[in-house]
Structures are given as C-alpha cells and as structure tokens.
Image (cartoon, rainbow, N blue to C red; front, side):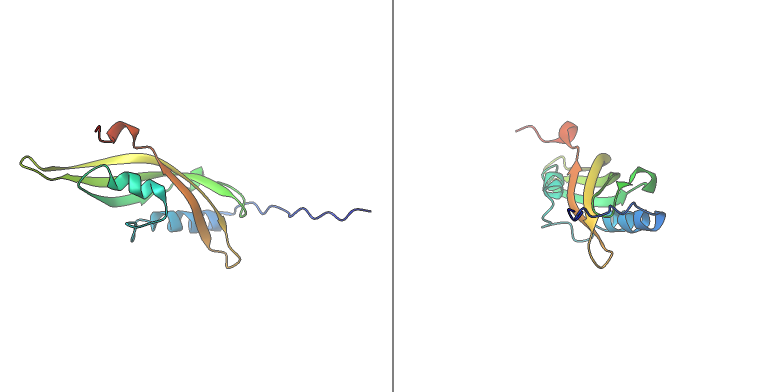
Length: 122
C-alpha cells in the first residue's frame, strides 16, 4: 500500500489574516534597498518617493498557511526637484503572495504594484 506523503493544507484563520496584514503594512519600514522589485519601481517614479501608508483589507487575503495572496493599497508621496519642483500624493493598487514559516511568521515572497499610469516616459 503506497504511503500518502501529501501535506494537508492549513486554511487561514482570522488571526492569520491579521498577521499577514500587519506584516505587509510594515513592509514600508526600511523599504529602500528591499529585495522586492516593486519597491524599486516606486523609487523610479520621482526624485524622492516615500511610502505614506500601506493598507491591506483582511477580507482580500486568501489561501492557506503554505501559500497565501492578497490585495493592498499603497499610498506614496512623489517629490520632484528642479526649478518648478513639486510634490504629489497618490495611491496604487498592489497584490502580494507569501507563506508562513515554522515560527508562524508571515513571509512575503512577492509584491506587485501597478504603476504603469505614472511611470516616467524617457
């Protein structure tokens, strides 16, 4: 008789969704130099881009502890230098995916931010 080696997928509980939300919303801390390419896309939008807030509605987090995904709203301040320098604030839609490690910490594996409408034309 073959041994079933399939791992049972653990569905997300509300507490898990709160952990994921907090993890994603705190990504903004020290985001410069992040391995997540989405943050490099934000940096390229202006001379000085800062994240004002990242908000993750828990109702849009889905999946299992082994693989979850969700949606985020990313709010940034864009500062432009030069003779007519100015600052603007805007928001972008984002999506993320990740997993929980053995210490029950949410690990964000990927973050995508849709910046197409605001990318500088060179």
